[in-house]
Length: 500
Figure (cartoon, one colour):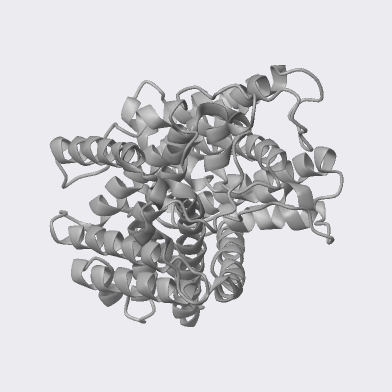
């Protein structure tokens, strides 16, 4: 979450930016959830790419370029369009969503570590043990936090290596293994008689598929690099479409590769990726490599967590210093890292981890938290898409180095409208309990999602209402919004927002 997107002397090539996008978005942990759908999983991936991935990347690029010299990220984008109250909601949701997301991705990391052993039965038993999972989740998270406290230099080094070793290389291997397996006569466990188009009359079939939208989440962060590309109006869209196509291919082919070797009835949301790798390595007589793959995937999880520990927390810290968070949350260590926010974030993650004790199984905990993160993140995305459209009319003369559509607003209405409607569809579907989830009552499912979403959404409004002028850090260089300048028209709902 860079505070600025100023152009640098070094210009990124189309392929370099495309690879950066892929590294930021692609994660293998969600493949088992979609492998249960067989051939129709490809439909969901393509649908989500068209109505969410591409619109997100293009809209974020326009907004990032438009405010390339101003801090705030989504707070700036939404705040300029809808006022600071809505902007604070957007940045708060982005931060809290990532905080709630940590236990879900770290559960996958714990399972990866469990498979470092050479005894499959023992490994699977360990991976299903709630106490073991809790200990590993908290250990990895706090390691990531302490690395983050050492500054972005450490975070950058670990994240860069981890993305390659723990995500891109394993994804390529999984796909290659699948091709070799089928080409050499391996038994295909995927039901190839299924239709590419899913049975949309079965409403619950869409629920887990809606989580694909979160697979593609994060592309908006790459919008900060729009000014670092030569001829951004032409080359940035090229990079977006290349990375989108590659991302979809990785997800589709990776899901198929997993479905080839693991029967749909045996797929487990937290364990099946490792089980799939183990199956392929046994088939290829490379069982010695199972621990290597497990370590690589675990390292990839640590790298991904590092990026998100340091990113959204830095974003809300920057906003908080301009008067939206109490001074306690603005404290930094000697390196300027937002230490108190990281500690609070860690406390929330630890509390969520303790929920393992009352949840019926690791898998149910994983799924319900994943759905809650989808809900929260999609609210932020809907605000972002709506803001892009609103700003075309509130700031029509503002320079847009990257613009969706050379003339007029029709193309933005199409792109932003599709993204908003796609996000809204996924938001609604996320409330429906998947038929594949057992061991958790409907009451608990709806209770956690509804109560959790209401509490999270209400919190920033409460903080906003309680803010005081003394909260503003006198050293904050947060630039004023366009409607805060003399003779500007006040933004909707911001009559009381001109004093921080």
